[in-house]
Length: 303
Image 1 (cartoon, one colour):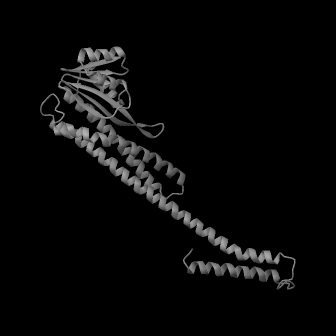
Image 2 (tube, rainbow, N blue to C red; image 1 turned 90 degrees about the horizontal axis):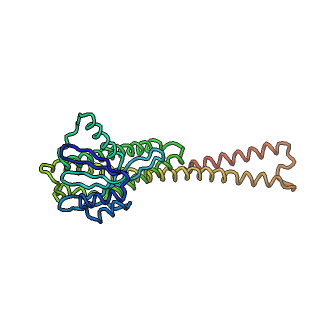
Image 3 (cartoon, helix red, strand yellow; image 1 turned 135 degrees about the horizontal axis):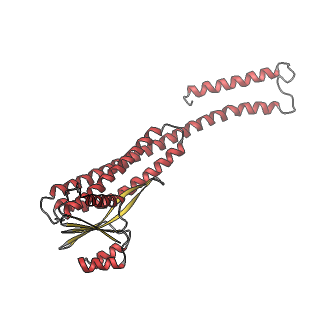
C-alpha cells in the first residue's frame, strides 16, 4: 500500500508493505535501477548509498529499544531520494512512521509547522529524527551502565551478571551497526553526495556531528562496560578467595580437633583416661589449639 503526502514541491511516498505492483510502479514511473528494487525485496542488506544521475538510494540501519525483552534491535531503512520526492520502503523505523503521520496531520489541519521546501531538507529532517532517537537509546544504555556500577558492590551477583550480559550485547550490536555507516555519512560532508539544492553543507555537517557524537558515546560505553566487567570479575575472584581462606582456616582448625576426638573415641588406654576431670582437660586443650591457630593465622595475615 502506497501512502503519500505532498509538501510544497516535494512528495513523500511511504510504502509499508510493498507488493509486486508497487515495485513495478517504482520501475516504470521513477525508472529506478532493477538491482535497487531487488535490494528492497531482500532483508538484511548492508548499509550503502548508491549514487545515480537523478536519484540516490540509501540503505541505513538504526536501533530501536525492545521494551519487552530489554534488548536493542536494529531496523533497516530503505530510502529513494530524488529532486522532488522521498520514498521510504517497507516497515521502516517507527520514528519515520511517526514523522510521516505528523506531517500528514499538519497538512490535514492546514497548519504546516515544518519548513521543508526541498527533498534535501526532508531527508535531513528524517535523518535528524533518527539521530535524536538514537541519542535517547544511548542515554538509556548510559543509565544501565551507571546502575551496574552502583550495584556492583551488592551481593546479588546473578542480577549484576545478567545486566552486564544484556548491556554488553546491546553495546556490541550498536558498535557493529554504527561503525560501517560512519564512512557513508562522511560522503555527505565531503561533497561526494551533493544532493539537489545548494547551501546544504551545514545541514549535512550537522548530521555527521550527530552521528560522530553517537559513535563516540558507543565507544565510550564499550570501554566503560569492559572496565566494569573486569572490575566485577576481580571482585568475584576476591570474594571467592576470601571464602576459600575461611574454609581453609576451618579445615585446618578441625583437623587436630578431629584427631583428638577420634583418638579418645578408641577403646584403648589413653592419658587422663581415669582422671575425673579428663573431659574438661581435653576440651581445654582443644580450645588452646583453636586459640593458637587463630593467633598463628593472624600473625601470618592469612585472616
